Image 1 (cartoon, rainbow, N blue to C red):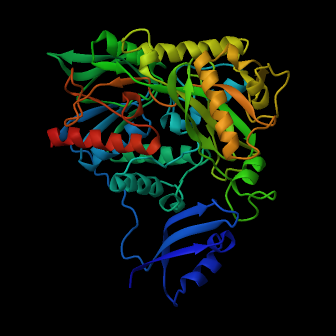
Image 2: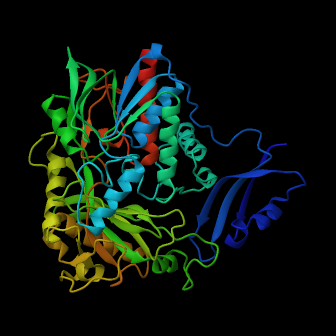
Image 3: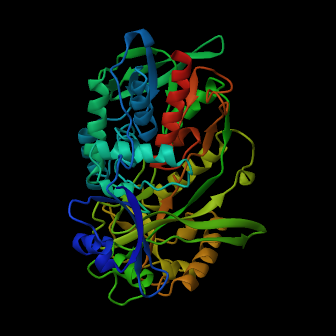
Length: 515
């Protein structure tokens, strides 16, 4: 008989299968799954809260069920193979509609070579990097799967689909699930092969150069094969899942008079600490996490008053046991991001530390103004780095004292760091807001303020600086029906799960018209 049991156990029992089975009081032949698991580290006696289901009568999470494409349904063009694009393609096949996925970057294996060249040769391929390529920006990231979205059924379907294609079942129960940058590429490859096996098409190194508009309606796209130079055309409704870094595409859409608007953005730095120090702080013990607990995370947020304006300062995309990586998508930029392998086993913890840039700071109301501000900050960082991918960096204590660092602490950032004064890189209000925020965070976490921590510039791509305006019911562009702006790059998602959910929703909207 199925039943749910709630437990609160110390880590040595919660993470030991035999001890957990004993705590559940299982009878011979009983089976169980963990529905929810979260670490409560608010007190010195760390506990783990669990909800377990005994003898489950149905799968914990469903997955997308693809069918073979029916030629009678025609095709839908999906621009981009990030989580929004891939989940849109799978959902189209759930309805028997053939997706044609167009990706400017390379497949996961070829893409890995180009990503390595950023660190080893200081070369950024503008079409194959941490932002562009199979799986999108999420492929070479921590694979964080937690979201603020409350649509539990859709979120669960995303997680269940990842499990079907190779992710650990632990993502179905952990409070902060993640897959890991070492696991994600194979999962993405499995998804691509499944799409193709059901009649879908996936084209790499194919860059969209234009959208086709007939009587105000989007009826397809034009593209170029980057390997051969061949010009291509694709007909059908268009799901535009381009990610947040496709500036050339945003400029093309502006020229086509597609309705867009500037969107507020958060930007700042990456902050890197030794992981053992974060473990000690978060688990209230000089011994750190011990043998059972995972690498500790943190989450900080506050509001500060800076130059007559109330601004938010917060941590973003925290990567325990991870690495800081060069995430530029063009040669004249320096952008940093964070990622972690599945075991979160590196010596470092890092997190974005960012400040809200509201649209009210913009000098005009042009739809690309925030994007251009973001771009200028990345170029300014590149200059501060000596026009290399060696990121400008400053010890946290030096930044707080407003003095340039003469050296930096050991770092996971492979291209290397350039000791700098980040006040020369960041806007004044951003530096001031970060200092105020760090003062608050250091009072909340004793040991946070240390010379062992390094600020690395700059973290600029927390979300998309543009929103492509769409009808809330049909999910089509309000200026060009037939165009379905989708995911993070359209301004309607933030992270892997929410982008995947939005891809599913856009595909459902197209399917309702076709079928």
